[in-house]
Image 1 (cartoon, rainbow, N blue to C red):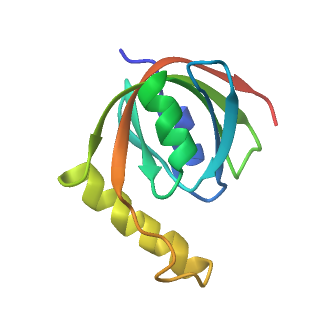
Image 2 (spheres, helix red, strand yellow):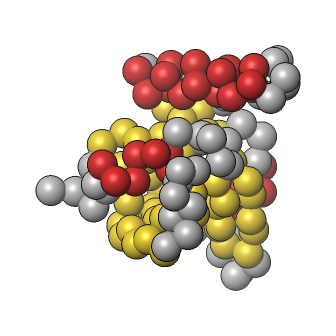
Length: 132
C-alpha cells in the first residue's frame, strides 16, 4: 500500500491552490502557489509546471520539495514531502492535467492565461495531515 490514501483526494481537485516549497542547492528557499497537485497513484503526484522558473531551477538542483494541499470541504491541511522524478509533456497524466487546468482557468475567467508546459512527477516520500 502506498503513502497516499483516498482521504487526500478532495484536496487534490484544484479547488484551493497548493503551496510548494523548494530550496536551491545553496539553501535559498522559494515558495510558489500552484494550481494543481494531481493524484497519479498511491505513491506519486504530478504538479503543474506552468511558469515557475525559480522553482524548476531549484528542483533540478535539489529534487526535494514540500507541498501543502487543503481539503476544501473540511479545511484539513495535507503536508507532502516530495522527491522529483521526471517531467512529462505528453501522455495520459499530462492530458488530464491540461484539461483540469483549462477548467480551473475557465472557472476563474482566465481562459488562455494558463499553459501547462509539463506534468512534473514526484514520489510522495511522506504525508501527514493537520486538522482544519
